[in-house]
Length: 538
Image (cartoon, rainbow, N blue to C red; front, side, top):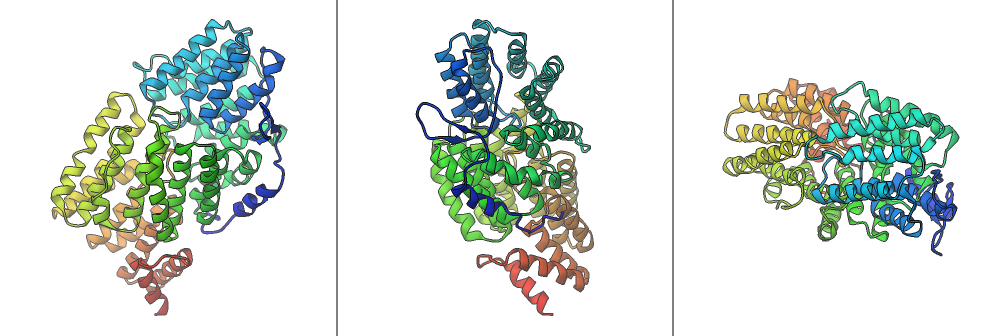
């Protein structure tokens, strides 16, 4: 992709935000300083006096600032008890990230209570009743229907709302993110994402300062094949709603896809600072995970270690039941795992402590890292024990109808099993198992909660092939991995080693030059960089 390793201007945008007025409407409430959240208007039948507060709440919702949005909608309902649609807002904010998946029982209880309150307030218009009916699809029968089925039901309800009220631009925008949330991760034609993008691109012309439009465009294009299309929205969203931590973070979804690591670091530093100011630990950790991922690709290991230390103190303030609980705990588990695995510090990975009592998917992160670390440091017995913890977590997710996360944990399980087999001297079986994991991972997509896999299965497959003496095939697999995850240090270093082992000195030197350029500000200690220097001197 054209953005590989190339700064694309977000640093300048962030500097500008500190001194220039936002492009968006300034929201003022309760005598507080003006907020830069974007320009939103959601027509309601509520009292005119509460309309500005309602619009502010919707702006918060569009930037995934869920706790603040829930409080704002609740405030509207308290001021205007007959405003039934305000309870819809509480239910939407309680649901949290529409692309997140996992929910806890308290989330369902609070959401259903908000929907009941909305109905008790007697919605005044068919349109408002349709919004309330739609959000109920996300919660209803959660003990019987899996998440994806309910996400599709919500998408279909929003499609009906749009058809019945074609002039309702907010309905179209919420429908677009519903399409993204309902998109099957196995659809490599990205049918629903492209349909969402078409709706949003049209809306953007009429509402260039709307926070949801640019935000949801980024999500619509957050796949390798479409990432370049999201650069314009990525550059713009931070300037539309710079007071929302998530708005400062979201550009990095695209920057990560194109390997623009410096830009990802800059926007996530700003996002983490805004989240800290807003007392949002999960959002702060989410930004820090993306920071860590980017630092490690640049081999800026000292910076990654610093962020890891800061994250350890923040995770104690994350609540499992919050709208962003999964993102917070995911980041808290992923950061130390990434710091160990990306640097090839296998014993360090094997000694990590799982975050028990959080989410099965987040616990799996650490057991995977422990298993791979133990196997690659020669401790096959510990690798077997850690790998054995993954299948029950997968089964727990299946039992709670979290099919997507169950699949992600199963990919990790296969990867861990492969390295364990390799540690046991069963290399042929190990190669076959990792090839299966790589194929499984290629057939799906990462969750937006993560900047990327802890260790891409295709990359691990290539590394295992290289260790098994199959350098030619390893080179092919490293290059395939880089086409999906551009700018990854380990893939580039692996391709360099594989090319050298095949005798292709010219290609090995080409990758060595790219690696040194990528890691020009690296911390000391990466052996791959010394190998690259030797190759460039030949």
